[in-house]
Amino acid sequence: MAGRIAVVIDPWDYPYNGTVVSTRRFRTSIEPLGYEFRLLALEAPDLDRADAFEKLSLPGFNGIINTMRAPLAKPDRAKIRRLL
Image (cartoon, rainbow, N blue to C red; front, top):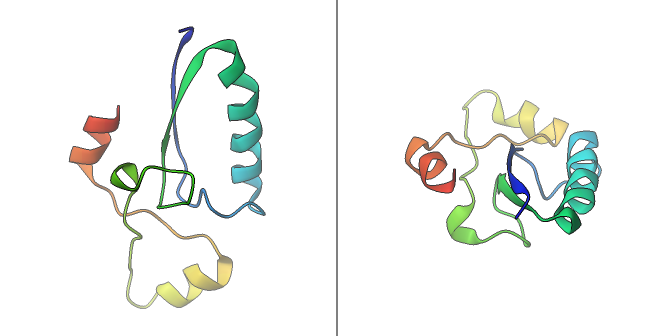
């Protein structure tokens, strides 16, 4: 193994998001080099459900967040420690 890389990105299942597109390309380019890629993100079809974070709910702001299609993950320190 060449090394480990962890990336925190909330909306992994939003392929039109520029940050997600860049991170997917980065992952695709480094995994063949032997790097272990750890993703800290909201639930998505290609992630282990136990490793996914819950969606953050902010009353009064949920409508804006949903309109922007930029969901945020609810912080979970125990899960972050376990994954890293």
